[in-house]
Length: 202
Image (cartoon, rainbow, N blue to C red):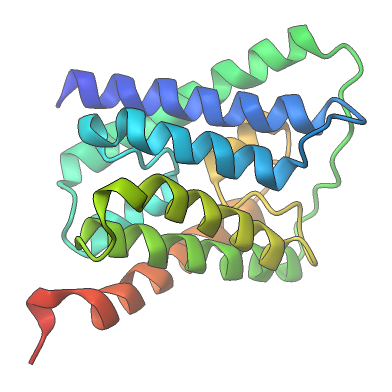
């Protein structure tokens, strides 16, 4: 266990889930939710990336572990910390927002597929960063932009969360918001390894 890295994942996921919750539960908020999420993640990548990798997403954590870029023990601790951070964001949100905006939550396959598509793009990008295909100075902007585009891909059929922990933190948690991002992130990360990993070059 790496305590500083685990703490970074908890704090980062809390901050990401809270930012999304502030945007979602404030009608008329000046920054659209996808932009708020992307900007927050971009900032956190530069702040926390050197400490933990700034995964902040159980689906992405599993995917990065699956391509050999994260130790299994670290992955387990990170996932626990991510859900804990999201739980804290949910608790604080329930205090801050007396009239929370009800989010449609269903268990349809279409919701999971929509989440899968967006998460695949996000994980493809993050895996490319872990394989050093993106200049360090650009990682925050690239990952933040990938989250915005991924949310846009998913939003036609879901709430566009792409993150099981954040889904919990904003009150949009159901089975498709777990399996969709996990399957999509696995697909995206392995496609990225095939396309981007210099160690796999012939």
